[in-house]
Image (cartoon, rainbow, N blue to C red; front, side, top):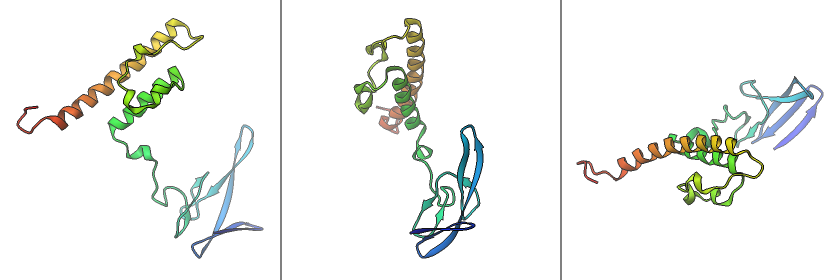
Length: 151
């Protein structure tokens, strides 16, 4: 792969194929923001991906984010961790997958946080976790229940 600067912009060569690479700008609060124009679709993007065939944006390459492939259950579990992290910070047991069942009542109030604020936020975390465990229970019941209805 090689990138060459020309007077009208850039050219990029990847996989033996040379494509023009254009830049565009937008105004930002700090000045000017530079963007790439996708050589395939012309879409403005911050990142271009190099494949063995082309240089293109995420959509033209057919890429997606991992979170777009998550099930409802996985998305809810990630959200539970994110909510716990927002309240308690980088508390080591939160990062261990096996300790998700730990009750939020077992975690202490963060320093310098008012009790009323802490209890309100902990209540929000607990409400969301209840919804998560309701979905989880339904999935586990479906998995471990025989087709004749016996467990």
